[in-house]
Length: 483
Image (cartoon, rainbow, N blue to C red; front, side, top):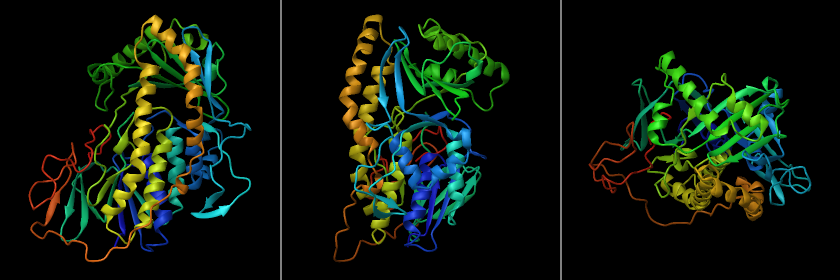
């Protein structure tokens, strides 16, 4: 019986999964227990401001997070009606990605009903949602507040995963942590995704001598990458800055600040990053960009961006990867939406297949999510190359000229995505089967399936999987989880 669910990672995916699983499974499993294990000792403040699309807001509202976010007042984030796109070279507007919709009120779900606590309800005036930008720590705290109202979710901090082991014949999964403690459950969710190369910082709006050239969020293209400038609170008091660029792996390693680095090294890295931003943007025709790039007192931080290659396996008998842990892709302000999508769809599948073996639920979930994720991954890669790949003057000019056309070509698919609702995704019904599901292999008492660098099966004990085939995608220990 599925009762104890273990979740690795308290990022957006892990917290969304806990909320959604609690909502969908509690009516079916009265004694359900969900435990989230986070490698940090306190909620992490890293990550800067996160973009929320209309569909991300819709799903966070469904999980009860928006009500908690509103309680933060001005710190609840900045409303974004559109992402304004500019040329950093000329300062001219190249177009915008609209979040308002044709009526100016945002986007509603593309269906004739909405859901209240999972129940479909006819609704003539559906809620609409625009976009937004909120500091990651604020969103995390709002999600933690929503979790606190659930009676069956617990969070344990300071738990870095070492390995996971399948226990047989107990039909359980055991996770071992680097502090030598352990936990046992019926299901393990790997949600400790790879971390998103960007240079990030936050500045006070009133510290600028020049006025911002944007209303809410701007994406500024150049031949050396792109520069995101966006307000991140209600009263536009703070501006979040993010410079996206391509660089070699050696440069990333040499410019990443580690916890044990001394102050001289930290200072050297900060100075080097300031020079990099200045070199790329201090000659911009946009006064605001030019001023920011020329400032010597902004502390930039380097955040490497990683991709998880397509085609990997997301699950084994008792464990499954969700969010970036399964399909980290290059950023395009959709990562939060895909994380919450994963959580809601998986929870609904698991509830529908509650009387079936976990691998069957995993299989159904994979068949639903993988095509959409694959398409998003491919589109993100194309978009990243168009925006951030180093280019000559002529190629950069051509790229700028093509932006309006590309916005028009993708408008219909983008708006369809904004109207999507994970609660309306069709879940195929279980098929009735006869006979007995195969029993356990009693030739071994346990099978190690993970260590700190990969999540692979052992070849002993009659495993049906060869020793070279990964049970799930390997995840570099950038974020603490290796699954």
